[in-house]
Length: 336
Image (tube, rainbow, N blue to C red; front, side, top):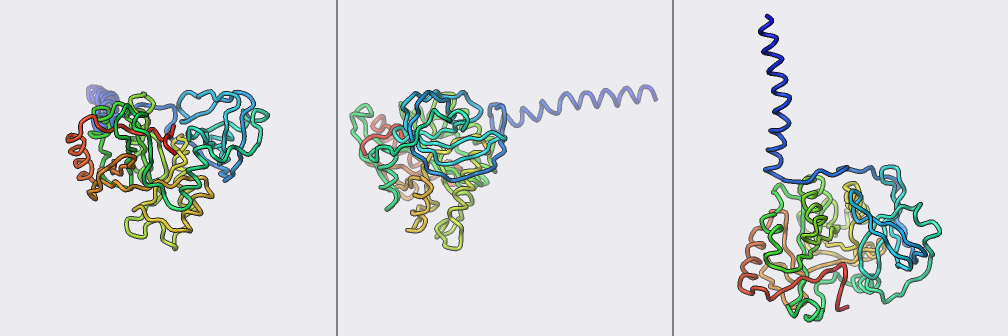
């Protein structure tokens, strides 16, 4: 009996020491991600606002809750778009109208550091907001000299709900194709909820500095049939804000760019989007539909594993035009 108990104890201790390690190895082999301080955040007291103003003293701002803050200098213009409670702390979601970068800023740090005022209507954010109010922006004009003399394009990858894994074989090799791998990830809330480890892998890639990824709204539920999210039976505003809350739950300050599922919108959805401070982004270069890019094109690919033919065709296109194209950084926009 004594031997039996020793055997049982040995088995339990061995199982306890090996199983977590084996699970970790298996997980890493499937989706290698970094460990963050907190994977999910509590979101409450969500309120839509639209307040313009200028900082009167430096303020710390976050692009992602688990990362080091950036110090915004005095006289930085800001548009405050949301009030949110995150993990019982009160924040504002703000956009810098010159760079278009989104930040999370503690309300308590603003105080007298923020002075309300009407900002220059010709700042890039307001210009794009007005332009997109009529129809989603499908292409940009830019000076080729500003991107090393190469043909400038915008690269966007959509992450609709999917049972497949993200196409990291393509994503992680973007530096092989572009010297400045800046791109925008349009993500549906359902994709984020179903693929938290893959999202973290993208966040880690962004934080590492190897690539610059803009995380943007692609609706929450993303219906798969026309008219998609533009269906009058759906509450478009609620869906848009629900997707935004999913980004915040993951600690990400979402960019003020939005892509309509299926690229289908109407006057009602455009007006609603504009009132929420979003710039609608479309495309005339959906590669899987054989729409090849030209100067200023916004390239549309799917990074969620649903449209391999588009990824493969884009690779073939770049192979035929080696080092001829460069990517426009939408966080520091040019040509408009």
